[in-house]
Length: 199
Image (cartoon, rainbow, N blue to C red; front, side, top):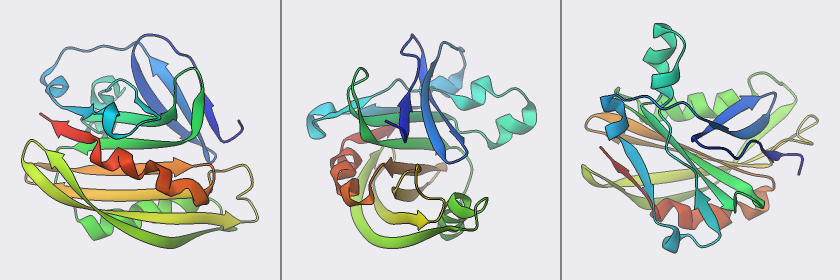
């Protein structure tokens, strides 16, 4: 499978690295003991059959510099289609940041980030799905935006993308979903009722 590569199934937390349009799912054995680890995303697999949840990981705890720590998520978790041994063609990443956000500006930033390095790519907004997202602050609204990626350089990249931003009283949640084919993005929709933020 050329668009989603699963590397290294070992102990530790799942980490996503985006390079040149490819998204690599890998494991890291880093474990740090701080209060950041009080935050986590829970995943109820009974609500999203055919999907599995990787471990929570805490990017800020493994950031190599103070500058990177200041922009890193407190906690991140990936929910992927298929199984660790036989991955599917879609995955969804959840990030929690403990800083304020302008939701509209953040969404535009996420959209621009997809095509900023390759001018032949085009991102077309195709749908919006409303959900109720569960957090320790109570239920809040999520508007999930779906897109199709196309253009001369789109071959070999993910074709379907989805973004969501949820402002909280203390920080915000950022959601990024990717599918090999935009036509199957809706297969990820059950995931958005199966994940909860706890702190």
